[in-house]
Amino acid sequence: MTPKTHNKILLTGAAGGLGKALREPLKLNCNTLRLSDISSFGEAGKNEEIILADLANSQQVHTILEGVDAVVHMGGISVEGPFGPILQANILGAYNLYEAARMHGVKRIVFASSNHVTGFYSQGQTITADDPPRPDGLYGLSKAFGEDLSRFYFDRYGIETACIRIGSSFPEPKDRRMLATWLSYDDLHRLITACLATPVLGHSIIFGASNNSVSWWDNSRAKHIGFHPQDTSDIFKDGIYSNSKAPDLTDPVVQFQGGGFVVMGPHGFVD
Image (cartoon, rainbow, N blue to C red; front, top):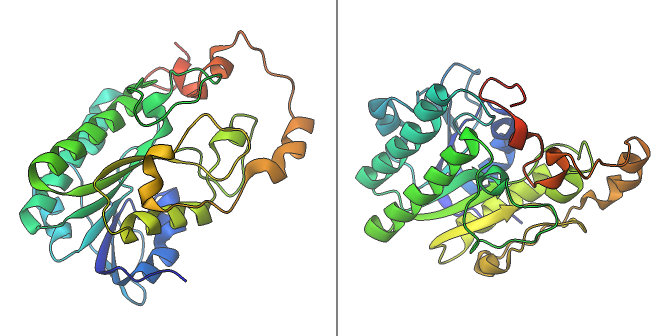
């Protein structure tokens, strides 16, 4: 049973892929779910509020934080691209969110970080949250900034944050890399629920992956969260292996945990 931990939760990025996947299950965690994105995405349903906001606009972000108890921050740009839009949405937007949280007394945030914060580690390594960031692009760099920003707001203002380094959250894994990085939608909600419900969250970095046999990430530093993934990519392994060729071990896309992001330029082309 999902615990109803808060009166009102704000979900940013509600019109995005993961925002859509979380919209219904997150209503189990609160009495009212406030949904926000930069442009219109329909009408509010039962126990919902919708307030549109541009994360780069501090006044609009101030408005969406008013009266909420916790934030699930999925908003911003989620792919590699030019620095200008990433700066506005992911860097300035994260600052605006935390500053508004401070002003409104919001004390718990679940921040959608990314596996691309550590994308330049080898696929032959297993890393923990103690290993330093090695971003694989401008997008990963912006998420590394968000993690540091959230730590500052915890150390100075006591705003607890779970930085979830989301792997590959889709209905099912699409390729061999995702056998290690896949996070089911149900496990994503289980992880967010654990972050909202744990008595003491502190500032925590958690790798977001299901219970996959192949893994590059050790979540031992986050046992206090109480996250127990129940899904696994293993059931898709035979199909993925039969429909894909053996990997080229000299290819950086295969060598590094970030996959294609390690060779992707700001306009989507290969460097």
